[in-house]
Length: 395
Image (tube, one colour):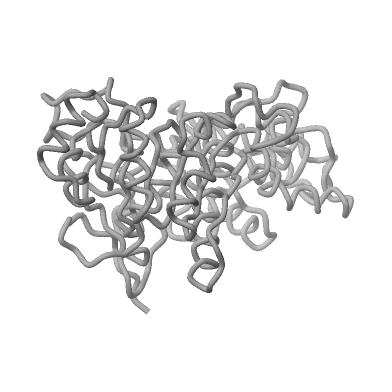
């Protein structure tokens, strides 16, 4: 089976979501990421930006925010009645809508679920928040770190005896948030195409992160996970699942969980150095001493020397690459995991499909770059578009 590498051609055959139309009310973080995922997979996504952010002088050049790639932008004043009507016109022919405001904001603007489903009963209305649409915290502000804190996930990330460590915002905003919203929208669209009515998808980061932690909860129930952080098999507690500093100050990652992979790692690296001993790795009481022995060994060579020594093997040793190094790694290059589009190197769409390849068709637009184009597609005549612009309802 051949899985097509993502292409970077606006005229390329569409991906698996070809024909899907999505309206995105501009936000930050997980909402735009969900919209990016849908656009990467072939959906026609129109982003509704604020009129105050329009800068016509920037049109024709890619916006630096890669999360906005793959779609067109219209600029609308959502607080004006005429702007509201523009959004509802977009919704009328759409399959889905994405918004990331606090609960109740779109209702006050007149583009909430009831307003949109009234003009399009088959619409999937996707809502992206941290706390969800209800519950004591729903009205309040929050950020990724706070959401992780309340799910228990943040408690488990960090070194033993030290404070919890923020894991970037990949776990909350994008894994538990945007990715869950994209899945929810696609799932609800499947139901619509099977005869169901449109519905609201309430994607909360706290819910998504909790789901992502299901395995840890299962391990706890089986007595295979301790609540203190940094003492378990997968949280840096095990010396054979950790990172080590090398002679050049860079790092390698060791993930030799299974005995046969650990044995290969030992063989390739020559572990241990005298006078260290090859203690039984299955006894957690030996882990601190084993970690010290591995750390002493890895400090004798550079990161790239260890990488070469491990070679093409099952030793489960990998160099810890920085952001600039990663795209050039032979495996990443062979799979074209990173691609260049509109002069910018960036992650390629994922996952891969054998029959409906994905593509980067458009660079990130500047706010309002496609206002006239999109309104014309909706049937607005030029004089009406000019009137809307004169009234500052669009830009």
